[in-house]
Amino acid sequence: MVDLLRWPVRVAAAVLVCGPLLAVYWTTPWELTCLAVAGVLHVEVGLRLWRQRPDGRMGPLLVACGLVWLLDAWGRVALPAVFAGGLMLSIVHDPMHLHAGLVVTSGRLRSRWDRTVAAAGYAYWPVLACGMLAAGHLSLAQLLHLRAWTYPLVGVFLAAVFIVRYRRAGTDDRHIYAPFWAALAANGLCTAALSTVTYGPGQWPTVLYALGAALIPMGATASSQRAEHRRLRDARDRERRRVERDVHDGVQQRLLAAAMMLRQDDPTLIARGAAEVDNAIADLRDLVRGMNPVALVCHGLSGAVAAIAERARVPVTVDDRVAHLTLPEPVAATAYYVTMEAVANSEKHAHAGLVTVTITTEDDRIEVTVRDDGVGGALAVPGGGLQGLRERVESCGGTLRVSSARGRGTAVRAVLPLGAS
Image 1 (cartoon, one colour):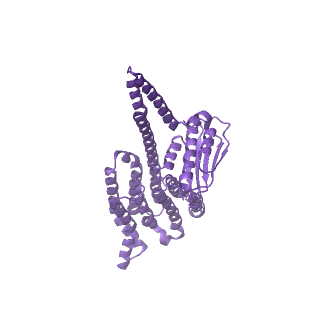
Image 2 (cartoon, rainbow, N blue to C red):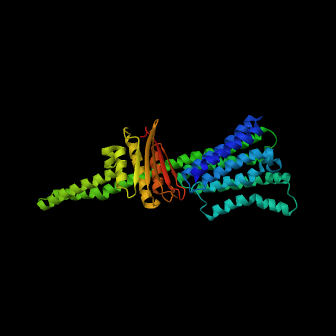
Image 3 (cartoon, one colour):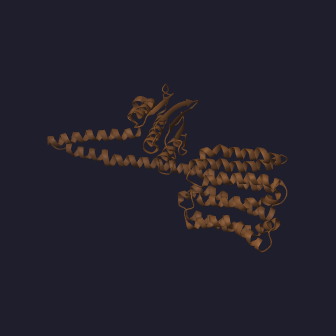
């Protein structure tokens, strides 16, 4: 889904910036720059987070925030009766920021408290507006005046929410998500100050407001990078524990038993000990094969991919354009595992009739694409095979993209730098 929406969303943001915004704010370049940067940052960071976690809400929320921001910047001049004073941002934009702050750790609203706070944020302005309408007073000036009186209280409440959330978070979560929560707090203070004290004509209030909003995608980027480092660290730890467990439970136990038998004078026990040594060697070979497959070590990436195609239960065609290259071991191993996992998924889950593997190189990178004609609908969910592949690819400095519209097959595309270590 995100791959299909990525470029239409970018085009929409560019049209808003280059069209109405440029026409309206061309006489105030500082204001134009700040408004455009804040909106585009939200959209770009949101699209990246959406691609990283398609099942989460953080990315779509930031994309929506960016588009609403750009629409509001245009609307305050084109339709001042509706957009004056940044009121539409208060009604829509700020609640989405609150929602993002609540879902940043888990991707969704998990607890009843989170759902209640998010619902209160979205209902805050509609409830106030309905109350004023019932009282017979609903003008733009009165709404802005009401906001000036209530925003300090809202700011204090939000600060308390995020302080409690920070205190309840674990040590790792505090380290990872502190930049985003701090950006939300800074933006809230900026918004409250400008909405209650200094908001008025002139470009500087708008510039400060835009800079405060731009802190949010910057904080989200910092938190995302820290979260990615933690995922990679956890993946390495899991792999190390797996190897340690396999060695302890398999090879080590066989070697200990063999050592005891070989110390005996009984020829039968000595023969059994020798057999145990042979079995331990076989186990060790299997363990090493799981790290670097024999086909990859002996025949390189091209031979290993050809072996995958021969063993597959579905027809696999290989378009290999890197057979003449000697690839770095980490790159070849990563490309091999991407191919193996993608072909295995096509066999098990996609009900594919044909799989195509394409391996190409350009400049200083190699690209591996595995396509099938199956049912589609594949997702890189936490703990799944595709997410594990993404972590492996990104640990080499590469990128992994999955396109899998239902009924249109699946395409897994990995791009790896040839200088990866």
